[in-house]
Amino acid sequence: MKLDDLGRLFERLPFATIDHLRPLTQGHQEVILGQGKTAAQVVAIAERLAAAHGGFLATRADAGQRDALVARFPRAEANELGRTIYLAPEPEPAPTGRGVILVVTAGTSDLPVAEEAAVTARALRNRVDRLTDVGVAGIHRLLTQTEALRRAAVIIVVAGMEGALPSVVGGLVAVPVIAVPTSVGYGASFGGVAALLGMLNSCVAGVTVVNIDNGFGAAAAASRINHT
Image 1 (cartoon, rainbow, N blue to C red):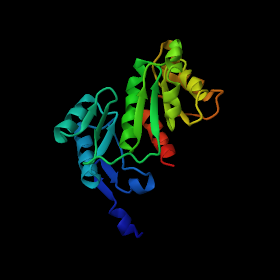
Image 2: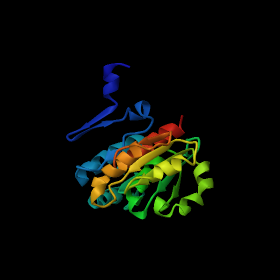
Image 3: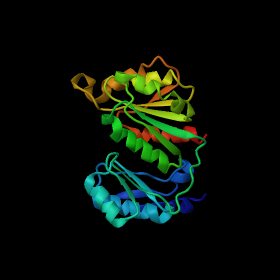
Image 4: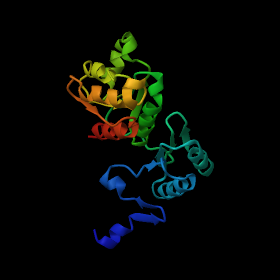
């Protein structure tokens, strides 16, 4: 490919350079991070992505950005809890992942991060199931769901506090487990650092850890595993 041809795959705005080559390099189109952007900037980027690819995904979108995107794209799905906006191509493509990505949450307070992961996994063309509020404070809630755990191809486990749930799940299944520490917890949780360190020190083989509150990163990794 010549440099001139490559240049046509970038769309330059005064505040952004939109990368239309991303489906070839990353396996999916560019995703908009709403954090730090104005509503007008997010809408302008979304317009270019929708024109080129038929849809878009925006994460960490605040209320103003979500309202602006839904006003511009009435068909877009706003997830207030997960702070996402997803405009699926029409018709929405069938999932291409080989199995189900299961998103497991330790507590209801972890749901915002879990929803970011679930919406992202769907946008990346995976089948997604959810298992909510099954943390170690009532471990029997999880142990009654072993069939759902073992049906999954990849499991994302979202937990705050001491971050113990991924180790428990990892000890029950033979599939990849991606652990997401959240900033949920009291003072000594240090904004999720305690959960992060607990997950990094898991004695269970096969547990991978992403950054604090990074539901998007967990879903991107899970999708790559599910498409391999």
